[in-house]
Length: 283
Image (cartoon, rainbow, N blue to C red; front, side, top):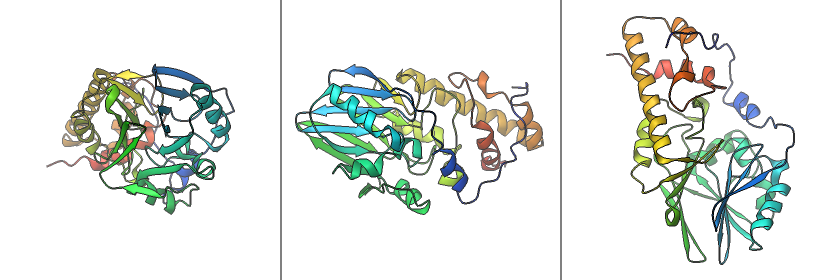
């Protein structure tokens, strides 16, 4: 990895405020689209993060809710799938492109669930739509004879990431713990590049074949495995360079993470690199 990818990261962020603003900068309104995965499980794509829609006999379980302005379209798309009411919303983490619709949906009587750390992160940033229900390790929703589990496996994109598991379909919604490009490690929200691959390794203990990423097309288990291996390859490469005494800025300027399998574009990697470099401990 020697070709120049990016210039030195110079932006400073105060107590996560900058990233809260960044993740609430809404793109121009666009039409949302629905992709069917199974008869009772769909995803709504466009604008913010991927929204999962799981239909049961007694109501609907949503995963994430994009930006506030997307709520009318989200509910319109849900109605195109089923007439059942939405009962639960499971947040994968706190960023505004995944929780922006929380307040509006809560006002409709929908119960919202998130990891305890995600709720704390939202509260510290004075974000709207704080979930009333939170958990430390696992939260199980049983509705209409179906089961969905929201599980925390450790630090990754943030310290409050939740993986949503649909056991009946051997499918997981990863939120931004897995995206179809280079990862963004939000150190202002307790994220960790060192722990991220280890956290994914724990996720892989689940029995699943299909992966809904936080953004991008639906992928397979093997795609997640390759993505994790790329993370591990990068870590070892950077460790080698750090042990040899190379300077952070020189390494950063020469680094091309887009060459790693499954990483592709790297829109926020330059924000991740300084913290990742600090995390690398050389004996």
